[in-house]
Image 1 (cartoon, helix red, strand yellow):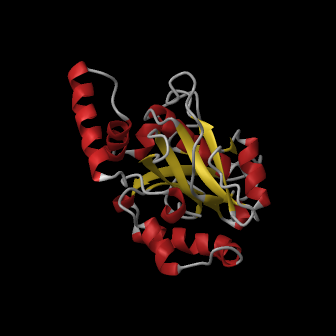
Image 2 (cartoon, helix red, strand yellow):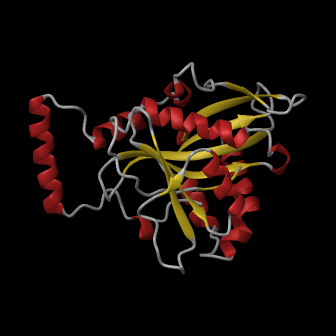
Image 3 (cartoon, one colour):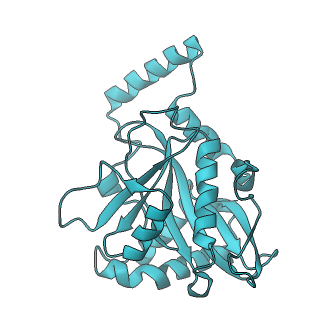
Length: 256
């Protein structure tokens, strides 16, 4: 559903004085040769142009291929894109699929905006993994849109899922699960602390899907009964530094 900055805050929104203090602390940290800062980790992840290579763990679903969970299902391929690598036809399809799946649900909550959704999908930090029905680029089945960000509440680096959408006729084949597995592998391999997302309270099927994947309600989920969404989070094995990384916020909604 996309991260709403008015609710989640702006990761770049530190007051100027604090930015200066953070800069001095960063220089001090560099002189000491300490571990990369969260902003450095996010910058390094954003600098990567080969999204498939970031999956990089043979023990997890591969970066380029997956198969339908149904025995007679067609072979499927997944491809990763930085936003400026995403072909225009796929960008239009991502928008159209999201609108088909989510417009009615949005209209019952905070409203749907074509321009806002297009801007979100075209953001310079947007990263995409698209699942296809075959080995070529025909017949896309589903996609995930995510970004690498520094969380404003606790300053940790996260992989933030903005959108996960699957075509009606491809649901139940493990497409959404496979796409999320790739994002989680990327989060781990880029040393993000966790993967995060937001689910509308009216989207019970998506909430159950994420629960099965191990996501739990984040401590920063708004407690106001009038709030339309729940924030979910899942630690990354490598990014959490062993233990003690507090769960935080998310974005993106799903029709898996």
